[in-house]
Image (tube, rainbow, N blue to C red; front, side):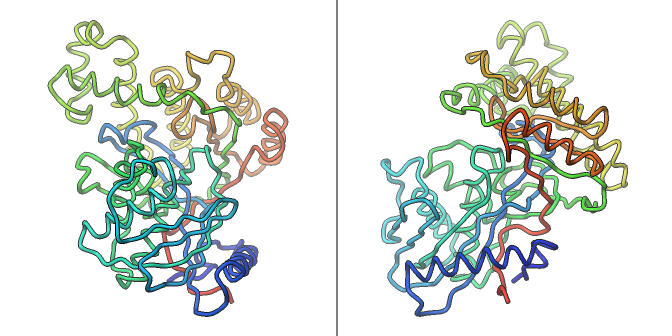
Length: 412
């Protein structure tokens, strides 16, 4: 278990009020009889490795200070009942853990899928009632769905398995739930960063046994703030744009008789460049080149942070952003040329930073958010500049959270 101060630092007192309010809401819905337990799972920020995980690449990611929390009471009725603030309650019977077609794209599917993953892996499950509330921004690239999946997995681990299910295994189960039950073919980065927490690199060369390494760097002492700017773009009708990225990368791999780009090298691609261009098209080639360069950048970013060279780290963040813009091409959708909020956000951010710090696309791209590392001395001006374009509250200042999905020892 972790204390609020271990998780939230200086914000622990404010978080205590948030948990107390959640307990009141739980008791108003489910009654006051029986002891409650508290849980939390963070959102995540991708720091490096834009669109690399789905081709078994490398990423640099961090659990962040925004999270989904739960007040939980175990039950013996074989039902998981979760009431999330602002939504109808999900009621999932553990007597049927098979995927249900009509449940796809719902939180009930995620609950059922996580429970099924636990059973498939030989772990115990049981019922509980829960009230959850989240400040993880939806559609922000901070992965609210992964945080919810990890939360459910952490609850089942602590209630029925003495907390013995590892963070890595919970992440894999969460991905299974999202892929097989929710119906979204996501990579493993979101779940892994949320479940493990901290500032980490993840190498997905072997997806069954991803290599996770903690970064030995105290970001709080860097003199910079991590900002996520919500451009409030519309993600509707962009599924095809997102899906084209892994598909085109895998088409290049298929040219060489492989399934994913991690199974070939940049040298192999460059030696057959003309033939691959003819077979797969220029955009697929550029996206593949981004993949190879971005993989190398993740290792260089980790090295820079571990050696305390934050200026080199920032240079690499900017380089990553330029690669996403020019070669990965996920800053705006060609199918919606009037909507280029990310491009405008990057322009505004660079002007506000005045040659300092760094900025890049955050998450999947096309709409949504950018990420910026902002010197503390210009943070207020940066926030005003971004909010001035995208509306008040568009710029969110985050911190890196030291732990992933956890049980809270109490709020007193």
